[in-house]
Image 1 (cartoon, helix red, strand yellow):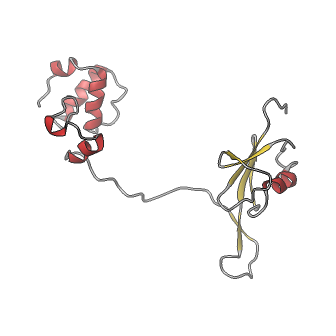
Image 2 (cartoon, rainbow, N blue to C red):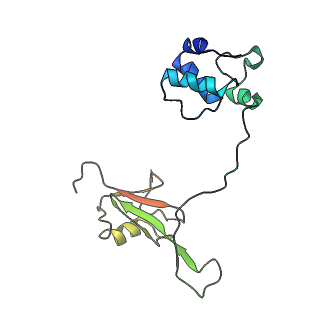
Image 3 (cartoon, rainbow, N blue to C red):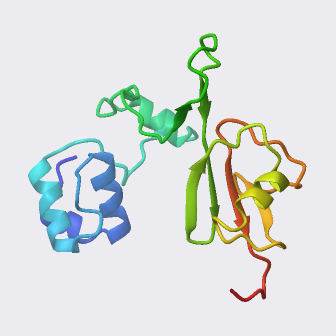
Length: 169
């Protein structure tokens, strides 16, 4: 379908945004209607989602996208960024046992990495109470879930101490 300014102008903003998304026109999802129409016209004809054909009726959105020629296969992940910290604690030990991985421990605005893997939350709380200003009633959370003071920390855990509600300080 060859669109004209008039036919596009008669459409709702939501319909125009669907066209922009389906044609992969970047940067026009929040622009004014006039600028969006001009971008669609400048991009030329392409698959449009404004008038579904009878061939795509009853199909899921994913199936419809897979059938359009404009859809490219997903690209593989080529990079990832993460934070890990290890400390060389036993240089003469066998391979795999030479380092100790640290775990991020935080309480409020205070946060640091400590070699506490294999320790219980209660032991860490007692050991770091003055360093991180941990309240004695603070609750330990690992990955956002509350844990008992007997929980043993594993590599990859992130420990956070949360002050009880209504507590000053």
